[in-house]
Amino acid sequence: MPEHAAARPDVRLRTARAGTAAAFFLTGLVFATWAARIPARKAELGLTDSDLALAFVGLNAGAVAGLQVGAVVVTRLGSRRAITVALPLFAALLPAIAHAGGLVTLTIALAVSAMVNSVVDVAINDQGVGLQSSYGRPVLSGLHAMHSLGGVAGGGLAALAAAAGAGVPTHFTLVAVGAGVLGLLASRTLLPPAELHTATSDRAAQGTWLSGWSGRLLLLGTLAFVFTFAEGTALDWSAVLLRDSQHSSAAVAAAALAVFQAAVTFGRLGGDRLIGRLGPVAVFRLGALVAGGGLAAGLLIGTAWSALAGLGLLGLGLANLLPISISAAGADRRLPVAVAVARVSALGYLGSFTGPAAIGVLAHLSSLPTALLLPAIGVAITAMAAPIVRTRQA
Image (cartoon, rainbow, N blue to C red; front, top):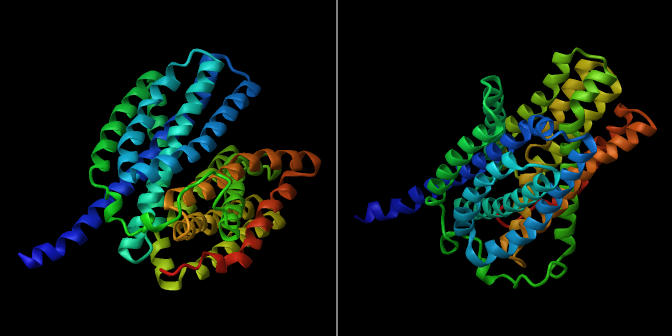
């Protein structure tokens, strides 16, 4: 009997980790489901590019607002209860996007969906940081890898649905039901705040959004901005770089995004073990140099294959930088985990949707390869800030 009792915490942790990984996966899957069918919804509603850009403004505004809502909800209710409600709700909003009848209703649906998505993001990262503390070793990068895998799965299912001639409403409804049910099952395995070693009850009260900031937290948020600036740029401009600037074939250009995403996923799958062996500071510094230096070298060499390799190195280097930064923010004892994560993530969101636009302006003034040197140099410079991610746990 004593032996069984002693084994129970380990089993509980492993089960909670599996449930958290499933939540990360489902979040990526639901988001990719919508993203992969953007062209279909655009055509169905007869939207112009500027109309779609306006809808994206609503999405981004909802995402940033949702981070602040998530900080309050997760701090008060705990990540387990927040995920139990928010993850199925996030999935259930897919049909609302599918049935939106015009630009206004689509924008509202996207804004609400993004807001709920951000609440889920805060909650799953809160649970992940707590599990990492309970394990006493890195686990957050592996959890983020599941989000990437979910995105791949969502895109793959969308491609199959489109090939089979399935309409967007049917496709979205099936995904919503499946992801909602799996989300409820996954949430049952998660740990309540009392079982997470995050010491949330000992931390300062949340206060207003402008209070409680420290120089360290602001720097971590700035780092997140740089990383998501580079990631958003790669997601939006990699295929254009290969096709228009390097004059590669359509197939090679299409492969650019897959190479980048595969590199991110691969890097995160091995990230926890690497961080456990070398420490977060060394992995952070190495990742920043590989990402920035790799992309810069690929651009300066100036061939299609060097650019493709540079994008792969960018993804590989970036893979663990954001999880390490979030982990460092969550280890700050002055704020609840959810609040610290939300603040760093909010600055990160700003990078993800200002990056592509800024690169577009710079490319117009010079050239796309020259403009892409900005995120490459920016990420490389962050290597100097590596000591900021050192935590007591590390």
